[in-house]
Image 1 (cartoon, rainbow, N blue to C red):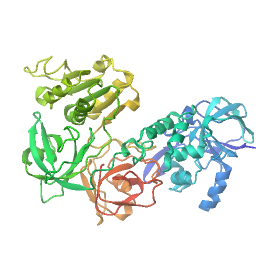
Image 2 (image 1 turned 90 degrees about the vertical axis):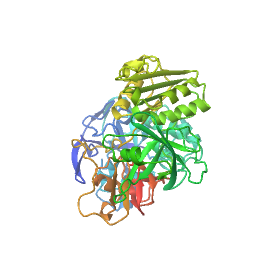
Image 3 (image 1 turned 180 degrees about the vertical axis):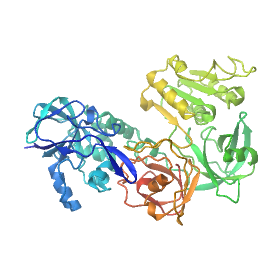
Image 4 (image 1 turned 120 degrees about the vertical axis):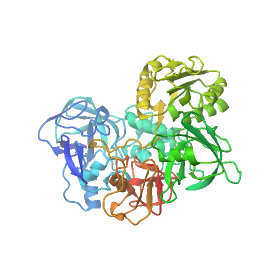
Length: 586
């Protein structure tokens, strides 16, 4: 008979960790007497990071005494106390390989429903003083699970746990956890999980992403949608010849790249980008830059288009010194910001040179899907700063169900409304609201960060779901450091303090930084943090895939091995070290 052994609560507090301050509520302690279970929490309980913990579907965390006994033996620990794993309910019985998603239980005066397994997070390792803990919970099939409170009421240690309903599909907590985190993922069981109404929305979204993945494709889009690129067409960098250049606007230059021997280049997906290695100064380290492919997908040559930035060393060299016949070392096309096949309406929105990846998508639509409804939205300063205007008009003429809105914020006298542009002002929320976009449209946005944030808000208000809005940002992406607040404005990336290392060179392409490896950092993630390179992570032990990063060149080794290897051409930097010189898309 299952029984509630201990009720544990704790409010968020600041904990010092590796020179930083973590806000966390994982420190739970037993309470004496009755405790009320409410819709969002137990009385006296709280979470420090509501993005990953807490909320209605994760109101109460459960962990079992049998798992305590297991970890005492595996870890050689005799100091584990109730609440040690961050759980609210320490229970006898209710093992993860028997409890099913959707099962309902009565404890005291409250009724609960099982919604999902525990989410992997570094903070359980912090609490346990065992960094491997997030991965161990998954590989040992003992994650624990969350409850939703269906009926609020008092609970108390010692009460019997009475099962009152079975969840549909009979999918255990351990099986659901393995479907998301472990390599074996039968599609029939993923589909079964999606038939369980009690499953939390986050896990439903992850399983839907896995079902959309093509058979045999690498990566895990359920954990990292951007980590499921097709295998790169070649490893590292190869020489491509500048076949031609073309001026597209006052500040934008296109470069056509071809195989030196004239062979066709591997096809790129519409929306992908190239990373090139530039050497404007032979006496200094090469520069690494990424540029979207703007030409027709499937063309025998690649076209990239580069805006000349006011203080950009790389763009100035490309505009001023690159000539037809020159050679550029180039990595294979990469990126998950790609046009999805289908028949749904498409919104392609861009500002400035952000037009480049969506222009490639427009080429693809004109060639392969001329009957799809398309909304082409673009913002520019004026006609002189409007690249590909004629090319886009020509493609849109081939799409009979297309709609066009071109916004000039400061049109010149010679720019004619109705011919060169449709609207005066910026492309923004008011215009998007008036478009009457269908809710099933898929939107692709590229431009400055503020533009994409505003357009995302506007499209959401227009009825598009968040999973239908995709964005592409060049430059450094926002970091994700759960539970750690930003300490003011982030400094620019820089070499780490102290004596330089003597190991392999580690290049962070988006940050414009290359530094030698030093063993004291332990992992590439730790080196990136020492350089103030923006990074994303959660488990720090190779299970959640939040840190998955495109490995443009080089090779890594893992310590420890990740729970599942990343897609080819990617690296899990939280547990990776360079095996030789590496180039990371960070």
